[in-house]
Image (cartoon, rainbow, N blue to C red; front, side, top):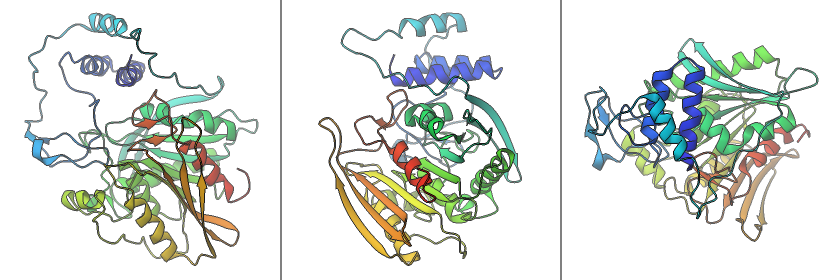
Length: 397
């Protein structure tokens, strides 16, 4: 079974578990191309368009305007036959076995059996979002930190958790991991609205929802000071930059993978320019003494969000902070892997910013698992690099 069917099965299972069999049916039918309401788009990530329009999109969340079409907002018949759920499941199972020429996607490595991966809903002042929460097994009962993981377009929390393999790594360090899911009501393609001015400011919109969710989890689980982090891929990486800039006192470090900086765009057209490396200067967040540390991962072959965006974010960090030392390290890859160039900014003996540029990698999570979408298993392990960076400030990595 390819990775898109794998993702569909995960989502359908979660829907059944949450008492939504009709949604499970729609997900499976979409995966099999059987018609019915579409639950995901297998070929590309997506982003917001004006209400009533549907357009194919790229992973950073900007629509391909040339192919946009008008929709009434109601499910449209595809003209294909539909089947009852039992028949659909039988057909899907028949497709699960890989062909003799294919070994199929790698199975995700699992976290300890006594850890939990649960579904929840958060209701905050600015709105609500469903989310998945990985609760590690710890001897003290108190997690060693919290990472908020923001998926890209056309992904969901289960897909993102599987692709990044973050739960398994978090279990080794006793870290709590939250995976907020973007609402399809807020964005029909499940993208975080990183380029919408209504979602770029403190006290409102998605930044407020995510920051309030973070602080609620921090307080509920008694997370220690200096141990709260946020990271994301593509549109999720861009939103991680937004939420860290607008709520710098909440987050101690931010990870931006194949994303864009805060204020890189203010509408769809400027988003295209920013993705192509022609955006304007990045904005600073509110005046404060809080400056979350920063790790960036980006591929040199990324044609969706060009790698100059990574350099812009890194340079803006250097401009904001008095840095004592800047260094560059070249790390050779394994025979089948990818090499990378690592740039670091250091202040008072602590690395405050790290940019990892991966040779030959496109728009994908470096070192991720094929069990999820938008991953490059040949890349260096971005999840491990982020955890190491997040925990390095106090020497616990």
